[in-house]
Amino acid sequence: MAGLYFEEFEEGQVFDHAPSRTVTEMDNVLFSALTMNPQPLHLDEEFAKQTEFGQRIVNSLFTLGLVIGISVGETTLGTTIANLGMSEVRFPKPVFHGDTLRARTIVRAKRHSRSRPDAGIVEFEHQGINQRGEVVAVCRRAGLMMCRPAAQEG
Image (tube, rainbow, N blue to C red; front, side, top):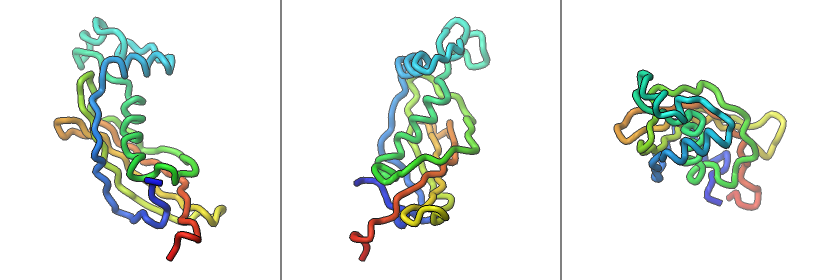
């Protein structure tokens, strides 16, 4: 498994994830359509030209999903039991078609589960960063993570 077990996370640990991804018009239109979001800011170029952005902006939930998705390979792939929730979600800058995003994850807190002896809760802060180094998305996410199996300890 590529993901880390609860014991392998340390508060303050930073992951600057290697993969980056350029967001396309297709990503934005398809995601908006699949989620039944008819917001003209995402879909209507003529409408969007009249806004302060001057063009369509990428659906923020796509941005959030992409940023968290980029983090999975190095942090939680195969070791997450459940996603417990997200908080403090914000989008300080818009994302446009053609922007290239990368992700950073910071471990903000961790504790053993009170109800499950085989698990712990890790609080991650995910940051999405564009090609200009601007933070475009931030979110805190609590994950219920597997503890290392007893057979692997040692």
